[in-house]
Image (tube, rainbow, N blue to C red; front, top):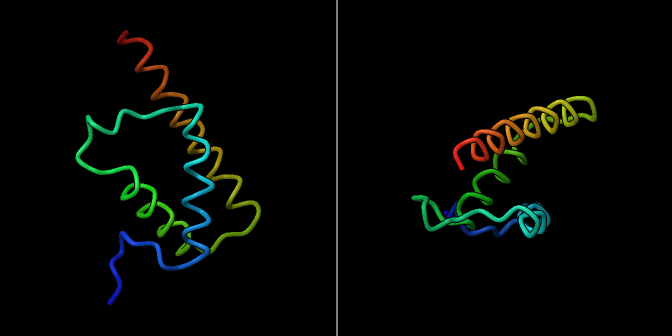
Length: 80
C-alpha cells in the first residue's frame, strides 16, 4: 500500500507541480496551518484525479473555486 501523501502517480505529481506553480503569486503562510503544503496539494490533486470530468464540469468547478478564493481574499483584506 503506498503512502497517500507521496505522489507516486506521474499524473498526480504533474497536477501538484503545476498547481504549486501558481502559489508564487499568491503565497500562503503554511506555518499557521495544521497541514503541510505538500499534504494539501497531494490531497486535493488526488480528489481531482478521482473526479469524472468533462469540459463543462471542469469549468464550473474552476469558477466555483475562483469565487471562493475571491471571497476569502476579500474577507482577509477586510480584517487588515
